[in-house]
Image (cartoon, rainbow, N blue to C red; front, side):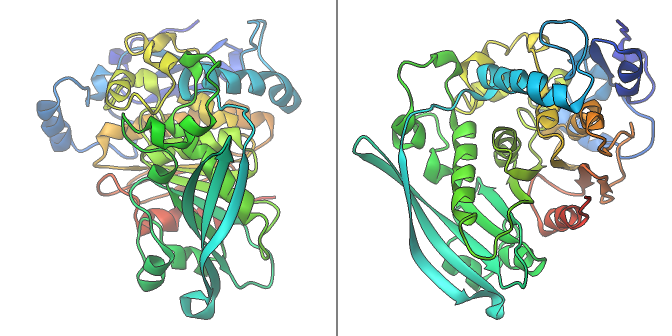
Length: 428
């Protein structure tokens, strides 16, 4: 095992290649203040945030020493998986269950019925280029029900198109609203013009985004009271589950391709998008925008928002067992690069914003880089460069993509444009 103190390094270094070559049982991740080219956080912003939030770290030189769990390490500790088949049949199911048991919770397997009703339809949306519908999904179980609406837009195309499911964690955009004006948070007209179908739902309509919202959401409707309370699903997993139910409906529509579908989210929605893709392999692409702690950012870096803080502020997002790691994050059997690895060989796109140090842009980028050994088993080209790209300079490979944009914590037209460019670059 190789251990190096973070403070002694003069540049950001990820020892992915070293662990891959020598077969080390653990990927070694080492962080420090600067060097290596690419994006660097604004020193004035670091100083300002460090003074305002003294309980949190915004300085690279204060990132603790840490070792990343090796996603290829066999569960019995005897070596590493050596092939894509071994990953898919042996390692991936165990890793997926580990995330269920320790982070996002286990979805219940209770029986339910779901129906869909068209609330409103426009056959000539966006100047006649698309068909748009507002649809109401209703989940029924034991005489009780819950409904949530989503809006779907399908371009009038000569060939079937893939769909992008958008998890909207801010507000519901009705059919009338998207027809009247384009919202940059979900620019449906732009997405359609680029040749993709899209659908969007609001997280709070599925499971309320507040501490006391359990009784009003889908978890109360579907929960198995006999399941382990420490690993029972919470809101993030419930929102991802709803994304899959939206995809169920979209796939039934004329003009929709059989494959190539994506799921997209920002912030808590970005956390949800990654987990939704891990749980549902019909999503060929996951896009996580500014997702930070519990999303794309490495938990062990303890930069910006921490596991302890997110669990205190949002105890209903992650399963209760995750809270037991608040003060012992290095004992987590996984880290967020493992989550990205779970999506392999499918595609993943991660985005950051340079003013959003709370979400740890460097930690988000490192997750993408550190998932590379799993993608290599499938012969997929991924981002492996140790230095981050410059601002507003997307880095795209066959299977993974990343950009860091100027500005604040948000999902903007610019972000969508970079992501749609990544989708357009299909590799077969």
